[in-house]
Structure formats: structure tokens, C-alpha cells
Length: 338
Picture 1 (cartoon, rainbow, N blue to C red):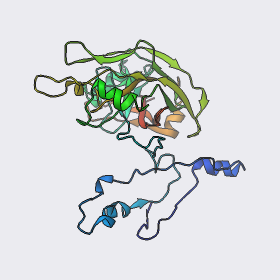
Picture 2: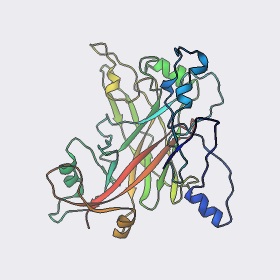
Picture 3: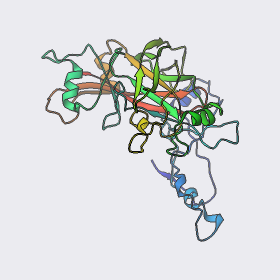
Picture 4: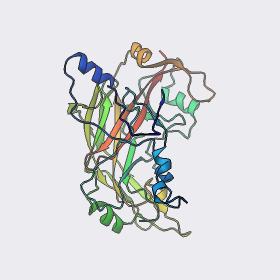
């Protein structure tokens, strides 16, 4: 790992990914597309008040240290640049995970979402979810494989703009719908070696304000979203398509003048769509897979339990099919140590 020397001319540093090396060895390598990213750039460094004039406004940005290219998937570009045909867009959509609603699963302090094997029990016949709650703390919610009646992944899109513009229904129409920034569908990419199915919202799902109150409610329901094709991005990954549903949570000013909708939605501006995800892990993942792709006999958290666990860390990638807005969600598949 090293930094590139960007003190002089701009250079191109390119390497083949592991998949690219495999294709080259097979005699099947060809470049059909490329991606551009700016993950390392902080545009807040643009200084319009630089004392030396306009030629120096972006000097700190241009001199930002840039890491050399890596071969691993998403080692360099986690949030790629997007292209939009329209040139008059004032705001671009964001995508975020909702951890405010009661059914929404939370991310742990180590940055992963726990997905527990419901058939995993400790020697005292206590299920893995109960043990994890002891070790990780009761405030952390845990997803259970194939159980859509419990915790779920909830994802929102919209303009994370704060008070300008505010998250009203009018601004949703003017800034989201009128500019074709709604996501009617999302593509979910997942490692089919560990996850057998992704489930998405059915036609009864709703996320909206409760009339006459400052609260919001979430109605859930799921259908299976079978993978249609193998992912073109990562080996052993499959793509499934799930519905996007119009987000009907709008600004609601409480007695103190604050927007109570922010107690339920993670988007601070006009909201677009949302989706819900349930995950099923492959049954009977062998211990050899936990040893090869994860860790075995590990403790979790700082709870009183001395229980040990086997786990595999993987990720799912969620992409809006209309705007291309995307996010990566780290998933930790976990069971009681074998």
C-alpha cells in the first residue's frame, strides 16, 4: 500500500482485478466498461476565499494524497461517480439505511449487521439470538435468517439536504418526482455461496405519516425476489430485483418547532422511495466455509456470556435502478460455535 505522487502531472494508475487476472489466464479478457470514483476527495476543501485568487480555490483538493490502485473489489471505489443526462439538477439523491423504525435492524459498533442462523443453539439449548443479545447489548437488534416477522433491513432514498429544501410533499413533487429521481426498483447483489435468497416488499407495504399526529407508521409485507442472473460485478454474486415504494413521510412540525418526521426517517430533506429487505442464509453452511471465509470460536461484544461463535463476513450491494445511487451493507452471518 502506498500513495501516488500527484505533485506533478496527472497520471493513470490501473491494475487488473482478481477476476481480470482470471479472465486473462483464460484468454477471455477484454475491457468493456470502467468506473470512476472520488472516494478520497473532500470537496469541502474548495476555498473560494483563498487570498491568492481563483487559481488556488481547488489547490488542496488537487493535492489530496491518493492511494495506488488495488486489485480487490471495492478497495478503491465504494461510491462511484454517476452520470445524469440533465444539467439543471440542483440536488442529487442519497441512499441511507434506516435504523429508527422499530422493525429496522441496527448496525453494530463494529459496522456490521448481524444475520443469525435460527437453527443454531448453545449447549444449554439457548438460541444464538438470545446469546448475542446478552453479549452485544439489548439495544442492538439482530436479523434472523428467513424471519420477516422480526427485524428487517430498511433503506431510504431522497435528498439529505436538511432544511433547504425541507421534506414536504410539495418538495417531493418538485425535486424528486419532477426530476425523475424516484427508484421504482432496486438491484440487490449478494454472495450466493452464503445467502440463498433476498426478499423485498409486497404491494401492501407503506411508510407514511399518521394523520393528526407527529408520528409515522410502517406497514410491512414480503415476497421472494429470486436471482435472475449472476452479477456482472463480483464473482459468485447474484442479482435480485426488489420494489421501491413511494416514501409518504413528510415534514411535520411539532410543538417545539422541530420536524418530528426526523424521528422516523433518516432523510433530512424531500424523501423519494424506500425498500425493505429480508435475507435467507444457505442452510447447512459447512464449518470448512466458516474456517476458510470467516472465523470460528470467536467471542462477540463485551457481555457477560462466555459463548463463542462462528461467523462469515460478507456484503450486499443495493443499487437504485433509475439513478444508480448505491450503498454497501456489511453482513455478519453468525451461529453458535460448532
